[in-house]
Amino acid sequence: MTPTTIKLENANALAAQWDDGHKSRTSLRTLRDNCPCASCQGETVLLRTYEPVPSPDLPGKYELKKAEQVGHYALQLFWGDGHATGIYTWERLRSLCECEICNGKKVSESR
Ligand SMILES: [Zn+2]
Ligand SMILES: [Zn+2]
Image 1 (cartoon, rainbow, N blue to C red):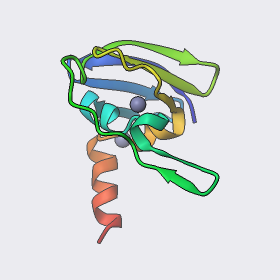
Image 2: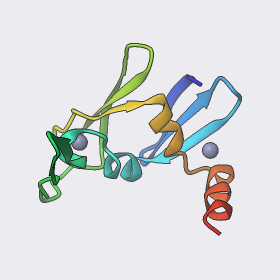
Image 3: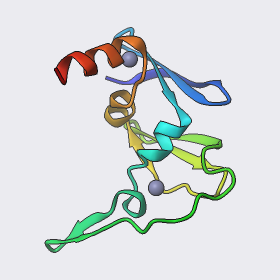
């Protein structure tokens, strides 16, 4: 599953067209809050879990400056506060989709 086009839908959301026909839509806030990098999510090294260090919200935190494709498998997002270590795999990007279809599915699955 790979996106054929990825573009900003508006100032607050990223839209992607997928090769299976799905059109996903994810708010920038959700993308940033789910940043997969180690400093945002914490990491487990040698059985010790390092919690992410909470950092104050800087201006531009939810402002997307740039998006760059990484190889054939992921997207790197560059944020307004200078954070750019998050690599979003296609799988992760798709799982963060907030369109009505995906949202409806998540709701019914949790019941
Ligand atoms: Zn991060
Ligand atoms: Zn969707």
